[in-house]
Image 1 (spheres, rainbow, N blue to C red):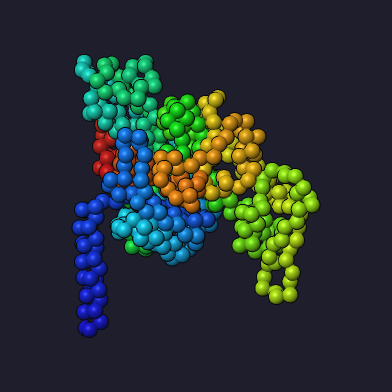
Image 2 (cartoon, rainbow, N blue to C red):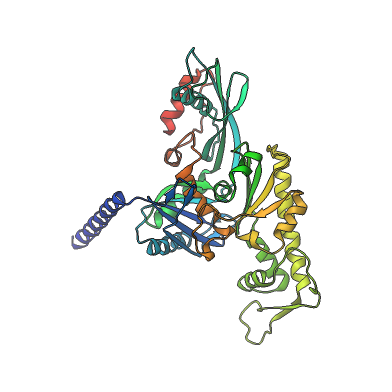
Length: 448
């Protein structure tokens, strides 16, 4: 009986703590973003007054990051270790910001990110197009979503059309007979989504949903002109390499590969018979994906694998290191290029490439990307958060900064993030004989 009383007391204490936290957050709402990668876990916190609409910039109230644990190849392999890493990154950001976080949005390049387009069209009356007409067109398009075993992370309007006039960004107040919309659905594996949610909740945080890392990285790193004229943002993380294609100011395609910087590290560890930690250090200090002067005569030292005190360091020419790194980087970028071509993604002829993610900082990666894609390439940084410290202002922090930008400035999505996070996507097809309105109603009842 005494044990039951103690348990009840602890539950009541936790409840009071949560209520107090909710009250505090009600007075000062905060937005928290977690970038869960294979190399690091970072957290950005923004207060309600951190948005400057005059120049579309943000101020991060707190930033925290720790070495990633429990994540491999873009997937969680140890729930306890991953949740501890999330909790530590959030706690560090909280200490800097002086606030407490209740919920987080997670950015990931894993979960086998995919995208596909759907379209909907509705008839119009003899009146100006209203918000209600936009909602009807979106609802008609949503009835076509059939992605069993997957969860929609983003549902974004790509373009509107009124009668035969396409490429309209905002058709409200226009006149016509038919309104059409094209939506891009970006989805992740349902199992990965559920695991991410469980991981966040185990860190005693509320899970606000998942976003595609290449998409939000692009929001942080791309200029408005780049989105309009066409650009490809390649997010090179530790466990995955993913791409977001923009055209006409909208996201039009997402592609991902389960290969990243950690695979380069593993190749170095195997090639030089050193430890993973030693390989990561050598890659950071001496690694390059292109040839350099005197690399045959310049020698590097790597710690031996194992704990034999009598074993000496591994000594090898720097050219051997380049011979390990360059093929892996080139192969990864070539695979991504071929997948983009096979997908039919509308990459504009003059579209440039922007590299983000920690693995993009490796010397020579930009030069290899120029050769593989035959396009201009630059390194991206979270330019919309100009007051970051130097340690948190590099390409590796674009995803976390992009989550904050998405919250502050959009783009506006067809279905809210919270609705997508709580939705249970349909696995059984709707009766094909049902009319479009019935299909839309069924989808909304089931998901929203």
